Image 1: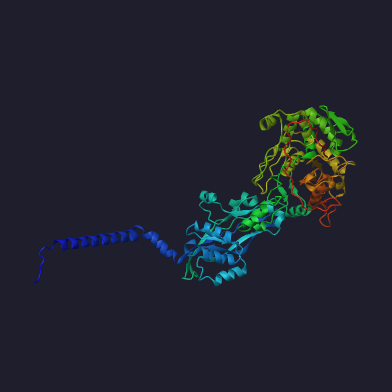
Image 2: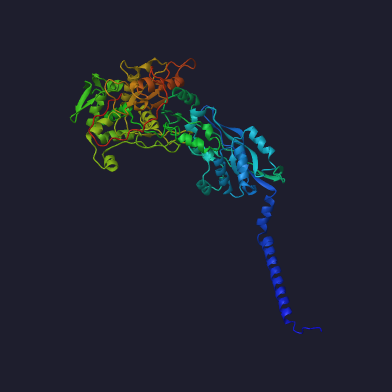
Amino acid sequence: MTFVRDDLRPVQRRLATLLVAAALGFGLLAVRLWVLQIVQGPRWRTAAENNRLRRLPLEAPRGTVTDVHGEVILDNRPTYQLLLFPEEMKDRARTAAFLTSLGIASADEIDARLAKACRTSHLPSVIADNLTWPQVATIAAHRAEYRELDVHPATRRSLPNGAAVAHLVGQLGEVSPEQLAADPALRSGELVGRSGIERAYQDVLGGTPGNLVVVVDAFGRQVSALAEEPPVPGHPLRTTIDLDLQKEAAAAMTGLVGAVVALDPRDGAVRVLLSQPAFDPELFAGHLEPAKWRELISDPLDPLHDRALQALYPPGSTIKPLFAAGALRDGIRTPSDSVYCTGAVNIYGHPYRCWQKGGHGRVDLDEAIEVSCDSFFYHLAHDAGIDHLAAWARAFGLGSPTGIEIGGESSGLVPDEAWSRKARGQPWYGGETISVGIGQGPILVTPIQLAVAYSALVNGGLLVQPHLVEGQGRPPRPIGFPPAVLAEVQRAMELVVAGPRGTARRLAALPVRIAGKTGTSQVIHKQDGVTWQQLPWNERHHALFVGYAPVGNPELVVAVVVEHGGDAASVAAPIAGRILERAFGPPSGPAAVTASKAAPDEPATRVAAAPPLPRPAEGTDKPPRPTR
């Protein structure tokens, strides 16, 4: 018996459902195809091209830097860098292991670099600089296995004179995310100036990167080049630095801690800018490893600190010619005014000692500068008052940045009544005025400020702006000191070297006439009967000297500060003499004076960290320590 079903509606409903589902499926597929091919077509077309094309960044060689005579300070050298294409990296751990095995960097550092590169999406990132030939050869041999890696020719900074110009030229560093966001022209991994000339003149030296589009095969090997946008090299930069004098200063400061600044007092052109100890600038020629960076910042002598522009020191007796000029101008002293120095004076009921035990006898203004008599300037400071002292110091540029192109310059400190009430919340005490009168107490200067101040002393009373490139400094401006006043102080500074009792009379043997002023700023109170050579290095006084030549027509002012140098006459002054002799002495023959690098019975060694600079004294009438 055969059963025949007459009702086909259930089958028809199921068939209709299947047809609708099929239609919806095909409709969705058509829509998706339309989106991929029409709406997102350009995006995927570009992605497909990137499967066979690579856009390689062409680094722009940075501009060269030369001294005033055209000698090379900063150049470029060829090298190889390693690029990573993040979109082609299939196994990050495998790539990291390979790079670690090459000795590129530590495993942790490699992981950090890869993670950073992956955040840049499809853009190639520099993973390593300064590849060795074995590393280049190994990467080339494994090109088929690691398509994400590519060795690329580049240039890196070359500094023929090394640490002698380290702080001057400054550091390069990888562009920061903030800089990338602010300047679209910068690229991830690009090196830009972080300090010194490299930073100040980044726009001149940096250049404009280019691009090279190449075809690569399935193994990542370059087949051909499709397009090239050549890079625009950075422009060369000619500085005012005299490289010969810069190297002489570095040699004279070997083993010492401090700074040397030399200016042309006529216009402020910087001839020497040296800070010691310095770092190895080759460390910053490429991408600095974190371990090296930690080593630098943990060094107790802080080699990254630019002492010429940033370190603050009490000026000691180098302040005396400035105050003498101010006292003469304002009628507080005349050239013939004198005091009788017995070795100590009594002011405000306290004894204030001169550095010369037993005193200097009767001294006028010229003799007071020649022998650096503290007693004379104790009385001068008392009669003038702190507001006069502060005004004189500021007139010579102290207490404000000099305006040199290099950033990070310290302002220094010139105290007065208003400063004391604002900064310390208490009135100024008279005993502090006596301290400031000999360059002690809460008065702080940088070496470059001293060079600028003395330039105004010897150039006719014009305050110059130090600069490293011709045309960058503002025109000198008058400070309001009559030529006769400045000439009187200059005669006194000539006696410091040429006088029979001058504190720097050992420089009189040089073949060039030099004038200047010694200064010693105390770090701690030295007990009677203890010589500075017997003190630990970090308890010795700072030694200062500011000199100039030729006498009568100055062309160079040299400021020297030796931290914990002890005696200015035997340590700081010979360094300045050596530089000035190099500049103006005989063209050949050994230098007549060499800088003492330590006491005769104790070699200079960097065995202890330099202590923190003394903080400005709180309000007190405690007598100052004598200086010379």
